Amino acid sequence: MQKIGFLFILFVFVSCEKNSLEKDIATENTCGVKRPTRDLPWLKERIHSSERLAGRLRVFQGNYEGETVFTMDIFVGPDGNPTSTYRCDGALLCSVSYTVAGPIGDCPKLPSKITNNVLIYDSGE
Image (cartoon, rainbow, N blue to C red; front, top):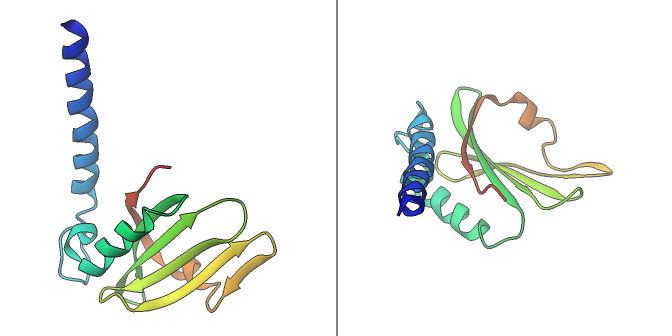
């Protein structure tokens, strides 16, 4: 019985941790939503479709030239990690892959110009 009680408390603690992270990510943005990973349909769908891929998916919310942007970073190994940055409406702002040979894409310097990055989703793989 004590083991069941301990497991229940552990489950509640882990659940609360995830929920508290979601509360922390309810940061101000120019998109007009409180929880982007839930409230922006295009972002929710991209996260859902990316979960089927092998690798670790992380989504960051940041600021670029006065507007909120979202950067999706997929780590699949030491070579060819795609990173895409989107505006609030889901329009692609930048796409770059980081390889052992260096960055490949249309905007390798953009990620360094994004400020106030906050991790809002992490698949944890």
